[in-house]
Structures are given as structure tokens and as C-alpha cells.
Length: 418
Image 1: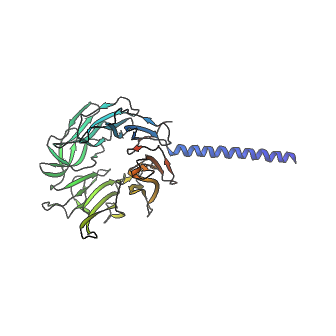
Image 2 (image 1 turned 180 degrees about the vertical axis):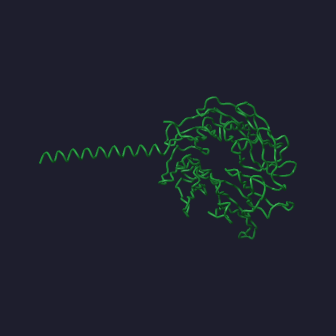
Image 3 (image 1 turned 45 degrees about the vertical axis):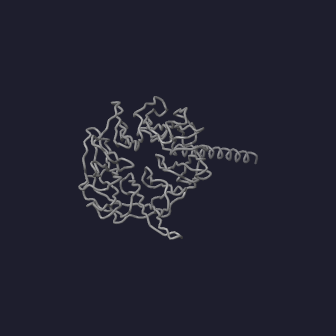
């Protein structure tokens, strides 16, 4: 009898140990499969704004820049495509009415900071070429607007357009996959057209047949289509009204997708199958005293070029961000009036992730499993912001940083090596 009890006891201990090993291994595999990535962001602490990195497990918070003057701030960091370098802006406040910007570059660990541009009134749309060898940005002041290019190998900067540009009608400029050209809507000599600009030869090629109020031309990832906005004016001969249009990448066969006052954001899915966009319109109304006022209404739509009509996903009184596709193209994230919402493929209702007063653009992890965004624990006026991670798999919300003031986080495109 004692031998049987001893035998059962040994079997029980062995089974428990085997189960423990199994579950520990399973947990390790799960943690490994989740991926360890580094995020970058700017943060204001003790009135000093610098750039920091942190891993998505909350480890190794690292300060990369060191400003010793509250009048200077390092902001808008952007990873290079291979994750080895960081592009960022230095904001210099000379007075309330005199703020200038400089473009800088440094290694991923903060070493070898290098100033790329002089002081400019505005620097917008800084972006990396797909191969990470060139940096494009738009320089603006009251007198001129210029598309500038910095060539890393040549260590030189040049103006890509010799003509006087009166306006650049883009929030973001689309690169071609080979990194040789960009697509932009430019106003030159009083006329706005959509162009391909060769960054090597500086050749400017107009692809629109009629000059008109075009804006936000956005090239599809497969480079077959261009979606763009258009504002109808009395003198324009183009189009059937203001709204979202689409045409072949060569500029031919433009067609109206949806008529609206203005299109704020256009985002292609990674597979080029769908675009998400945010149109808005203004409507007049009379208040209680009979005064005529106007309200702005925002919406979120998606459109498949093979379908007849776009589909409305949301009607929004207010908006916080542009829509962002997950890298796998299955989900669409947007922050709306303090709420982080995700539209999942095949699911009718959006998933609302409980990030405290989410604000700004959400940022997807490269493996499409997590979303990083800024949230305010005590409401927007509290100025106590944190960076949060939201899991799409189990809707878990993780507070990654402590109360401070944060710029929008972005992920290193490559996982950390273990």
C-alpha cells in the first residue's frame, strides 16, 4: 500500500513539474512572439523638451538629447527605414512672435547629432526616402516655399524646384517605391497642378490636364492610382464639384468618388485595396437669438476602387487624428474626441480601447498587435499625459510612461535583437 502511495506521489510530482515547464515555455514563447520594439517620442520634463526612447515592455527609458534651455525644444523624431538613425526638429523660441526651426539628424542611440538646415520659420513634412538615403522637407516663410532634399551620401542639401512655389498643397508628400520621385500639388505662377518631381534630376512633370484647386495627392502603395482632394471654384473647368477624386498614376481618367466641402485626410491601405479618408462640411444654423452660425461635421469613410460608392464608418462632431492602417492592412485606428477606436476587418462596430482621453495620431507596432498613443489621465486640461499601449488581442491597456507632457510616439520598424 505504501509503495502504491509513493508511486502515485512520484507520478503527481512529475506531472506537476511537466505542467510547470510546459506553461513557462508557453509563456516565454508568447512573450517572444509579441516582439520587443523600441518607441521614440519627445517629452517635456522640468520645462525642458527632449527626445527619449523606451521599449514596449517599459524597460530602458533613455534620453537621447540634452537641452539646457527652455527656449529650445527637440521635437518630431522620425526613425529611418532601417531604424539606425533619427530625424528630428529643433524648435528655437527667440520671442513670443519669433520661433524658428532647424532640421537635425542623429544615430539611433543619440550619438553624432548633425544639423542639416539653417534656421527657418517653418519646416514641414520631413520624410525619409524608402531606401533611407535621402531626406525631403518643405521650408516655408512669408516670402517663399521650397522643397528641399538632403542627400546623406553626398552630405549636401539642395532646393529641388527652381521656380517660385506659391503654395504646396500637401500635408504629406508621397514617395515612389524606388525613391527617385515624389508626388505633390504645387501652385506655380498662380496655377495649381499635380506633379511628379524627380529628386535626382529635379525634373518637374505635370500630370493634370487642367489647372485647378487640387490638394493632398496621395499615391497608392502599388503606384497605380492617385487619390486627391479638389475644391471647386467659379473659374475651374475641372470636375463635378468639391470632394475626393481618384485617377490613374499617369494622371488620366480622373473620377469623382465623393462630393464634399473638403477632404482632410487620405490614407491608403498597405495592399492598395482601400482608402480611408475624413471629409467635412459646414452647415449654417440659427441660434436662440436668430444669429446665423455654422457647425463643422466630420466623417470617416472607406472606399474600395472596385466598388461604386464609399462606405461611411463614422459621423463625427469632432476629430483628433487622421486614420491609420495597421501594417498588415486588416485594421484601421483613429482617435475621436478622446476615444481610441479600431475598425477591424469583418466586424461592423468599432472596438473602443479604454485609453484615458486619447489624443493625437495612434501609432501601430510593426507586427500590428499593439497601438501606442498619448492619453491624459485627468483630462486634456490636466497636462498629465502618458504614453499608453493598447493590445488588440485582449484590449489590455498598459501605461508605459509617467505623468508628463508627450509628443506622439512612433515605433522603430525593426524588433530589438535579443
